[in-house]
Length: 197
Image (cartoon, rainbow, N blue to C red):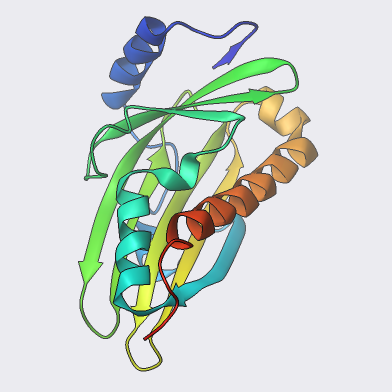
């Protein structure tokens, strides 16, 4: 949804509620769980080393659960007051090209595993009024053999609305900016913990 002025919190809440009852806008829902993607979508993958050891992994997991990977100045996340859980719908309000862009996504899955590596991840997928169509997974991993802790973003997308098609190169720049700033936010969240084994 494209708007010329910032929508009220009430309007955002109504938008999220209406989108929460609708279906995903793409095939292969849940494909990011195994690193797959449907044909015809652009794939983005960004991975960074956050630190080492249990403290770093705990801080990274806590940051994801608190949606800290969304804390930057051109995006507002709505309904981040609970940890990600399947079927939870969130609103994403972004400022771009002089417009307010309001999107909705639903959490597809949450993963918490101990083996073969410790990992916590969740993915969300786009709903009908989203400018894009696709899925994005956010994951933190602790590789016990070398103690390394990683943050990994995997997404596949394609434009879902006319303006997104027309401004596709700009949208791609914003997607890359999001991934870059998300990794910086996660680095900041983990930085207070020592990177020792």
